[in-house]
Image: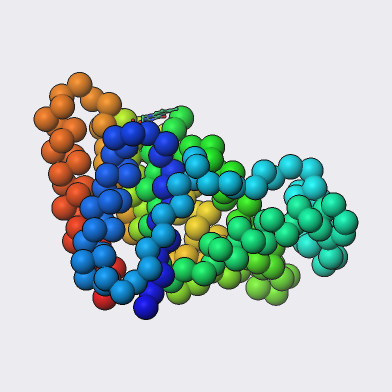
Length: 211
Ligand SMILES: Cc1cc2nc3c(=O)[nH]c(=O)nc-3n(C[C@H](O)[C@H](O)[C@H](O)COP(=O)(O)O)c2cc1C
């Protein structure tokens, strides 16, 4: 039995990224009914804040110390969030583009889980190394505009580039992407066509990921 974590980063009713993720998960579940699939809705979940004590703990760990007292308590909440994240074998992230990047609740979650000695390490010989390895990640990305490869508009796409970089940093190398683009254009039939294409890709990917 494999465990799959779905991180849901859109708070919107009728969200396109959530809808396409649901198509992926339906097709996945049909093939692998015995697997455990958990959705973490990042706008509903209790994600720890990352404030002064957590930052102090991070710097302590980076310099090889053990966080103490209040700082230690803050760090324990971070560790729990990371332990939960690392339990899974496969990951799906459904995410809207907000201001050319990701919504702040996802950024908060990433600021919590990207931590020294827990999800990455550093040594002068080997540099930075990710610790969350050997697991596939499917990114399902919705955006109001269109950011074609090689077009000047692509330079505004900090959503996909950031997600590929940050998950790559903590060890993910098998990262696939389904995009739902142009969701704010004024031709509803074109939006539906983009959603249909993304859903077809998600159903195929759900089957593929289940092997
Ligand atoms: C706060 C906010 C900021 C947004 N910023 C952008 C943006 O920078 N570029 C863009 O193409 N679309 C932007 N959009 C539009 C969303 O990316 C688009 O509606 C997308 O479909 C949202 O994903 P969802 O349907 O899964 O919620 C923004 C929407 C919101 C609510």
